[in-house]
Length: 370
Image (tube, rainbow, N blue to C red; front, side, top):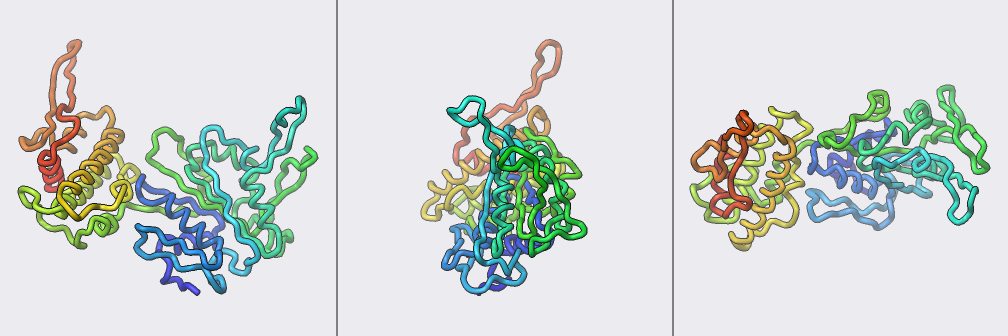
């Protein structure tokens, strides 16, 4: 039987918070491992005998789920059927997709069917003796979350649920929804139902979630972790000095790691915590160690991700991009060009579309040393 120390810290913390609060939202910059965390929690929550959730990039592989469920888990006594129900919110997500609603029946004009959405199906499963259910929602702020939950919002909090034996308590909150016959029926969320969601705060295409909605969820934040990136790149724990020219793959990786740290510091100052770039964005594949040429390709791909991110975060702010790219330094492959158009000063960054290996190393070194 695995102990708390056998399980990765973030996974353990989220499971323990779910056990207490029932609802958790994982937030953080892109590339910090939110979706991976959701999958890892799902693997353990379902507690399948002989199942392992190990992943190639895991610092500590998950143990095989066997034996008695730990007492600190969500619903440790419910071991008949533990199921996860997964969904992704988008702009078209509706209450009928998540709870219940009417939809036309295909091939039958004028005939409607009452839907069974993700949260509804999970609730019904969790109401059976010995069962527990986990609803996983990725990209929760990409859709109309408040509308999707609808009347179920009033019963989300742990003290508003049914008791563990399915009976009503003094604080259980009931709400109306459609029954199978189309009529309204009273419904309350079960005790052994859990909701785990993830959101990307920096996504400019979505609206912030309602404060009253967020209040019903325990927040859990992931941050960029330089130690994870350095381990992935095969680097020592502490940064080392950068040579004038790279002699090994590790020199290139050291420049990449240090430049990424420095860029995140500047993004934090210029835009805020949510707009940083996580370590996972630069861990797109195994970092080659056999030759400097393969490492150069890896670093070039990583830089393309970094450059695309800062272009998006500072879109329209040419002066900020110039500072980030060291465009006014003589060793930078980029330059800040100023000209006049329609009587106004126009600034733009000029430079190669794809950097040569020496140009890329020089740029990363410049950024790292700032």
